[in-house]
Length: 148
Picture 1 (cartoon, one colour):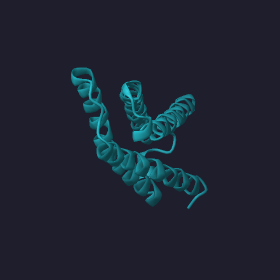
Picture 2: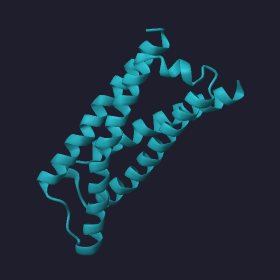
Picture 3: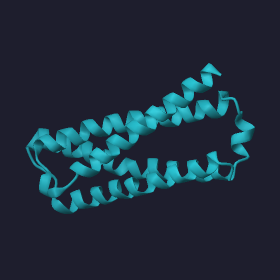
Picture 4: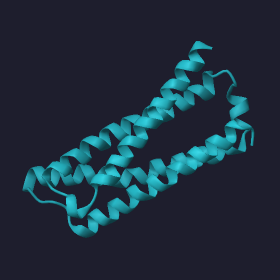
């Protein structure tokens, strides 16, 4: 039972960290606010966001493998599969902004150039898609926890 509680707590902390740093990216990734400090901050936020994502997926996988309910229970749940599919889609979507933030920081440090308005808008759109999809995962989790 202690392992289950630790895994659940770790999963919850990872979720909250994930939400905070995704929200921070959404708030800062705007052409009207973009300056050198914001580019550096976006790159740092993205590292924390990525670590939170790894901990989130790792703790979730650990709950499936070593949790009280067992893998067979999780794998028999349709909402689990929907939730995992959405999370994997979010992970795939996050690669584009992550690469952009690293590229922007590299360009800033090497040439002093900031990204163009179109590129910022494209990346912001992907961050916003993730921000709007994430609550769907939470709603699915609520229904799943109540036996749907």
